[in-house]
Length: 474
View (tube, rainbow, N blue to C red):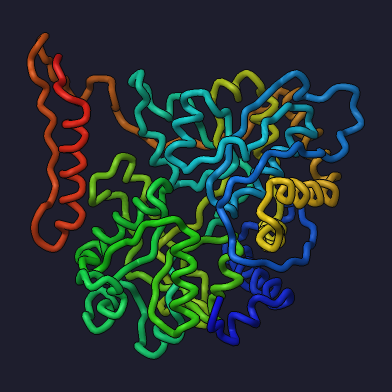
């Protein structure tokens, strides 16, 4: 990048990037209690460049040595796996795949079906994909309310499975450190209430400060929109708006702003190599909010009650976060989701998945190594295979313990899904439409005033959908 600052030069050096990963993720692991003694752990040194979300070519993995047993619990069972369309999810997906291969399962290459969350949950519900290892709960519970063409819901077919990383997906907004300190910025709410601040974030001159958010097919984009409408619960962030685009483009824009000392706000998450370039405490800070989003779902989004962020996250000190620190996002559980019928057909998996708990720091280091590579699936497989070799004893213990638990008739750990209420059972009332009668579809949106930017596009979308579908008759 032309005109790179001294800080950018430093953070691109091998040792600094490793230290950045340790600072960003070691502190997170400690604050969240996510890296317990039951997690497999190895050490990996790394260097990295900007992450990519390209879907590389498929390659066959070489799983670790199997337990010394004549038969394996997964023999004869084929599973179709998909993965997320963000690069930081590739490594954990491939590790889970190779663990299942070690247990005898035939598992397709997840790089062949790369999807955003909405499409992934629909694909699992419809059966074109059996499982993935890239769910971020509770936010992804919002997709459980998606309705399929047969009238059933995603929740009727898919469930969250314990395991992987509990309370580990720390997420929130980063702000340019130099700008925040020069202007004594503490919260987004403060920025929203002061035109002298939010106007500096208005790069296109439309009268709104910009939050660089998420791609439109993820989940965080909807959560951010609800956060903007919610604000602190009484005052919305009505002078702010979310910019949606490919995440790497948003990230690159933020890097440019930070390197130039310009103000910027970017949503990001951990574990990811992004925070080894935009380093909290070095060139950015985590930006606080006054109040985490509740379950009120102010925009009425489908599944929006699951956007609630509980008590948020307050675990960073003044060196990394504006004070008083409140990220406004609760740490996510990064877990497997799978079709219920496939779990019921192969109950061994219900006993195995809760045991699979790699070290979150291992994953962070591997992501940095991944970003330093050629972007191929072959490199992802190579990195995951190295982890498997170094943690073969853990993997074999997980498989053996799951087999023993199943044989003993133990009840496996489960996750209770969201309460979807009386959807589709008629308890909320019914409307009968006679043959040939028009069906009236109505929507209510704000199309004037400060929040018109939210309602006008939704109203237009309804008009376009009706025009595209044509007349509807009972």
